[in-house]
Image (cartoon, rainbow, N blue to C red; front, side, top):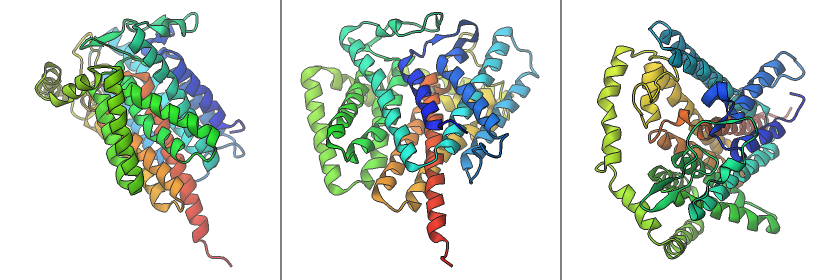
Length: 426
């Protein structure tokens, strides 16, 4: 790779976070978002680089490569299996475009895992992830308070709208999506990025920058409840459960005090919002939304039992033809079968395991904390993927494959250091 991967990935982050995800190249539908197209080019760049011994990124052990190959093979197997049954033209088009999406996800993870060369470059990428996620948070805050859909002015000419531009509402509050496609997606994205933002603010050594990094933390944290989404709040809870036990006692005390103070401020500035969000959480399992989701289980079990191993084909379970399934684990079981569900679980678990493995071998506190923050981000995804069909939403899916790549890069860099320090001096 003769170009700097972090620079290329930074361009990708601008496309991912700044351009509204619902605007696509018309004929390509959901696979035609600018971010998805850039992601495919990343895979092409990665594969071409492997042809040259000088530029190949494949030099050290990297478990992410095996994870991505396995995940892609499960999708390809489901595609082949899906073609053995009668399929409509809509399903066939969706299956073909689904392969394009998966190619892009693979490109993001592989370029990041193998291309980030030093801890300094990984830190630069972390900063840019946080900076990128701050933009949809700002847009969402504007949407929440004004009810105006600002994103219609951010799309490139020639793109088509693939989704509604009308703001959702719940309990009298606007539910902003920022530049994401849905408030749930925005909420889970912000919950996954918040640990990375906290790391940058805590360990910032430049006083002038520290102030702005805490502003990013405040923006991301305050917009989370504005999404009026249970997934966002519970994702925040998951992130804190992962982080708090590893913090110093004084950090935990500050976190509790800041959280309490922030809750009071939110209650004063936006009366009813905190109560609405807490009520949504308290009625989980008994409200109409929850019962509708659990009502999907019987239909899913019946459909999976007909094609248990490889499913009916990735991306072919179209909501307009079948039904809406707000659970990625169920969707994967339907579309890619039990084998594909294992592929999804391996993808999510590997990020956690690589981050935790990097934490174990890291020798300094800052790197150990960074590894724990990446693990927290993956934990948010493990939970969040059970609350909506995440692979249907480009921002969260692209982000999580990027974070998987970051976990792989961190593991590789730390194990390199560990091997070097362990070698005897002759």
